[in-house]
Length: 73
Image (cartoon, rainbow, N blue to C red; front, top):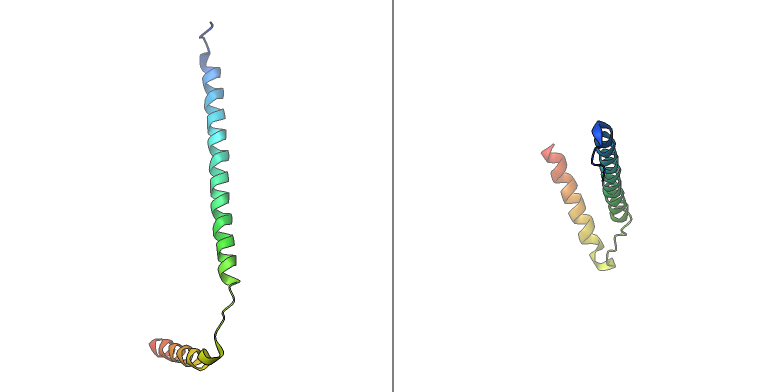
């Protein structure tokens, strides 16, 4: 059992640990970015369904919000 590694064995081990850490970090970050990207796409693709009876109410509320927002500016 030769336990003499010297400085070289330790450096290789550290470099390989750093490389593995970087790869795993990139995979985690990339998966997070893709998750939020697809969540955003799913929200944008939702279709708004309004009952025909509620259309005047929807229009009134949207116009009122628009007027209040413009007064606030």
